Each structure stands twice: as structure tokens, then as C-alpha cells.
Length: 215
Image (cartoon, rainbow, N blue to C red):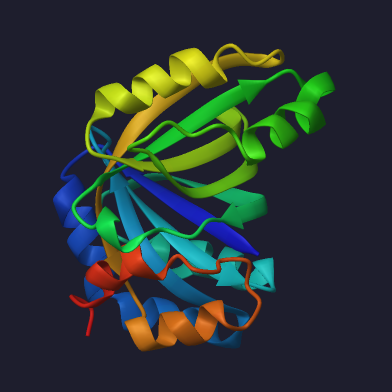
């Protein structure tokens, strides 16, 4: 499974970001064979850093939080978000330079299944590209999370207003832009990882440009 470990700070978000990157070897060592660091990301306007981890043993993630992550200076809160029934979509080569956005939706529990099915393959307008989609069941933020690529935020907002907010069962939505991404494995390792049946096929073209900076 893929989990997101989200760390908040009430001070300098850049310092938190740099500290995680500086300690990446220690963090991976702490996980040992129980998990693999994939990448770090940050949302615009948020004093946070979100670490994406693939794991088959959540005890490894808990040990990571209780150990080195929790000891990073400036961390004031940590939450663990599960990507449940995740779907990662093919991303065309022409998407480099596009902005990534995250849509979080609060859903009526009685209509979870129906809403999930409707959003799995929605009619995406021209200019938008699907990245990933999953249940998250975040207590305060929402139940479903959708990641899209777009040139401009306005086109995503229009999609949310016209195609998501109108679905029966959607209670509320939030839209945020991902500010930056930092991979913790090389692009070659990413290709090997995605070939192992880890539910992230063909996400290569968008991520290749990011992984080039990690090698």
C-alpha cells in the first residue's frame, strides 16, 4: 500500500523540507525492508511536507514516525493518510511543466461506492490530465483524493464546479496546488518499482523530469 506521512510545522516549511531531504538515508534505513521512500511533496500555502511511502508493513511506518520523523526540529503534528484502492493513470509526454492539483472531496458515506465509480473515469475536459485517485478517509479533510495536471488553476476549478460538485453524494470539495516534488529513488528504480505490480503503471513521463534531479 501507499501511505502519505504529512508533517506540519509552525515555523519554516523550507527548513522542514530540507531536513527531511538531508535525513533521507536515515529514514530509509529506519524503514529497512518494511517500506520504501518514494517522494516528498508540498502543497502551496501549507507549512508542511508530505512523504509518500510504499509499504507492506505499517509497523515500519509507525517506527519511522516514532523515531526520526518525530524528532525533526520544528515538526508540530504528524498524520498518516492511506491511499486506499488507488488508481494511477498514464500521463502523456507533453505534461512536463504543467501544474499538479489535488482535489479532496467529502462524501456521504451511504454513497461512497457510487461516487467512487463515477469519478474513476470521469469525462475529463481538454487540457486536464489525471494523475492518481484514491480513497483516503481523512477525518477532517475528506474521503476521496484526486490529483490532476493542468496549465492553469481556473480550468481545474471549473472541472470541480461542473463535474464533481454536481455528483449526488458529494458534500464538499477542496482544491490545492502541489508546489514542488522531490523523488527519493532514481528514475530507473521507479521503472523497476512500477513494473512490480504496485498499482502505479505508466506514471513515468511526468515523474521522469523530477527523477532526473534525484540522480
